[in-house]
Length: 266
Image (tube, rainbow, N blue to C red; front, side, top):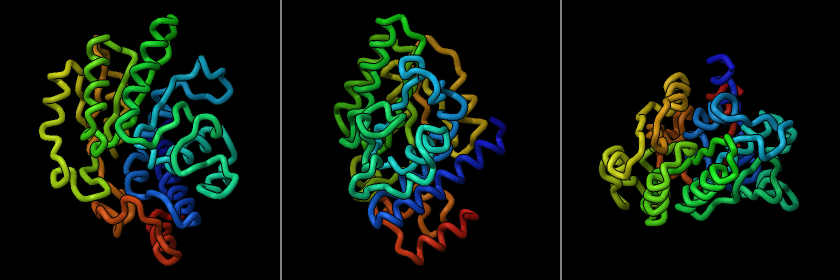
């Protein structure tokens, strides 16, 4: 994919998030649009994610920050796992697109997530399983910074380093905000990069909205598991949502939805 194509996929993710959450009148916008470039570059560049491939031949992505499901649904639809118009059924009765990802219902979803802090544990299990089966599968986990306040997150990171899981890449959507306020107010994570280096990870720090930086980070060769610290902006691309903690789990009303879509060029 060209840079322009990946930028357009990211824009479409943001449009789908606003439309689907606004239509559902429920869901999470801020943290879904902050990871748009991360998901676009993963599914259209870094991962083998062609829906025509058997599941065992595709790379795996665990969206640990499961509340960002609207962004995942958009990228899966754009990749061809289900019709694009289905994203507007988000959270509706009978829909395959629940408020958090469900691998048993939604094509292309590799893990059911939503209880924060558990995604890296799932990813570590997948990476170990791939190694034991002699598979070349790459495993990716997309995590939020707020969930790194969970003890299970650090236990899983310790296990990944111990088992030298070079087939695992953890990408942190580091937007600095969570449902109750800023990370520093709720429970400061301190120097994330220094902590992950101490745990034994290869750490690459990038602007999470800079597509070339993300693409370069995915290609770094290492003998250790990889951690990409992607600095992002919550609500990115929508002026009245950017860096506003109140837009963590709030749906836009009709007027706000139209304003947001206009800013996104929809």
